[in-house]
Image (cartoon, rainbow, N blue to C red; front, side):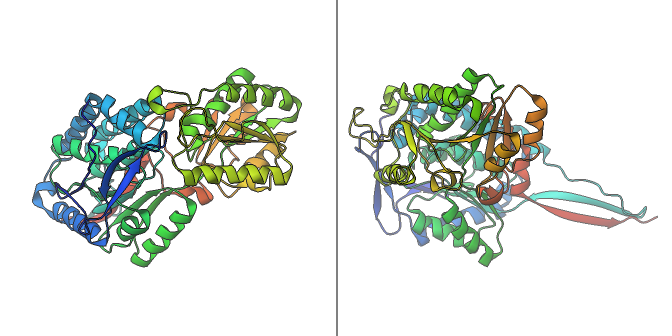
Length: 484
């Protein structure tokens, strides 16, 4: 494993560089609060340099004339390099985010799979022939959009960075990426691997910095052709307004308040295992976390007790120790989670387990896995995204009531349904308002092939699978008069 670099640089036009301002930011390990590295505090000038580099490469014959199959081979080489460097990448990801090493290794493998998957799709982005008249040959071409902006969150840095980079490059675009200021290290390492994989200079550019500075400048840049953003609803709204002023398309993957709906006829041990896993993975800092437990009233006490027991038994600790739950990303986020415990008290809800900071794992930002019962469906605990290992319990008596509660938030990202009655499962799947529905499982292993995206304030556009390629291409219609 390479020694950790303590001074990082941005990657623009194939060159490693500092910010034009010379200012830097320090990233810390949330498990220990120790400084990890400094990196450039990018600004509008840095973003402009990166966009110009990406535009020059996109318009160049070098990139335009590379066959789609060769773009695929570049992605395959990147996939191979990621797998070869998996231990180093996972180590960096764990230091930066605090997540358990096993989860970081899984994220690295998913990043490799995105490269592998879209490598295979690069030469299969097809148009259509459309019958018009006998003397007209009419067909469509799917062309790359141009320069795509990618604003990446802190919770799954390597996985989400490559999730959008791979289809964008497979389709022939060039990329300017802004990783989160809390977690820039693996994105910069991916840029290094892209260079080693043979990507021409300017295809992948990484500008580090704060979202309010570098991120805002990237979203507002007039020469960006598409924006992909994953993060909060509030920031997504700001980016959407900015994009509207430029008439730019956006793909938004925003928050969630996803339910697991558990019926009395389900395999309760299996359901409990996945209910716990879906809210504690990455310490609950997951947009698709199963943060609401909708449980049939007849099994409420038994099932909630089972879940609370599993939650309280989880080992909390530093990511490099491969504990089951690592730290929260920052003091700010930890304090936000704590504020919801005050809401629970004010609402008269019952904290069945957890509810406090965890101080036994060291000096980091740890919070106990928490189950809150007696929650009102219309209350803040059931409506707002807490983004921590906090599960709220909502009972129901009929499938109709379960559906109403499930659909009773502004979000619509994921739903889990647990039942042995396939008719009940299909009934709910056809009516619930969410982009993904899982029956008797949750997440299906996070498959890269599965279309992912939200309804309502969970965003729009789709990531993952072949569907994602539609959002990195535009359709051109060609009609040719045939002599005859």
